[in-house]
Image 1 (tube, one colour):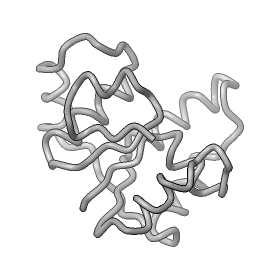
Image 2 (cartoon, rainbow, N blue to C red; image 1 turned 30 degrees about the vertical axis):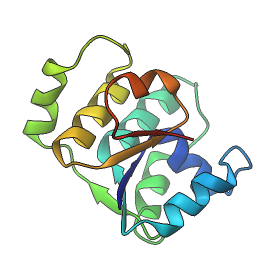
Image 3 (cartoon, one colour; image 1 turned 135 degrees about the vertical axis):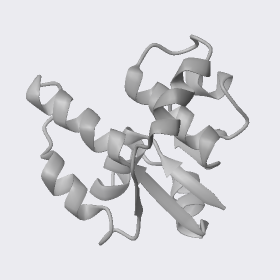
Image 4 (tube, rainbow, N blue to C red; image 1 turned 90 degrees about the vertical axis):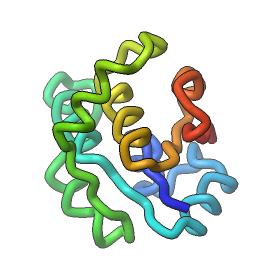
Length: 125
């Protein structure tokens, strides 16, 4: 199984947070490949600059591979895929993650139930 972690799931996994349920941890640990999108690092960079999150995007980017995850770059076909999405969710970062999951394909692991409206590839944890 190939997974793409939503930004908050990536942050919870790195921090060893209790917000990441045991079932989600097992899913991640049992996956063949687990990806973190460059869009997630971009999201953290913007939200950190706005004071909405206390995180260093450079530290997070550097932690992807040592954590056993793979980096997923944002490709033009991912960006173009956003145009085909229904307006179920307004967050541009989440919309890009959905487009990436559909294009690759990858299962998107998230706690955001609204994202399940897009595809059976969304796994709500």
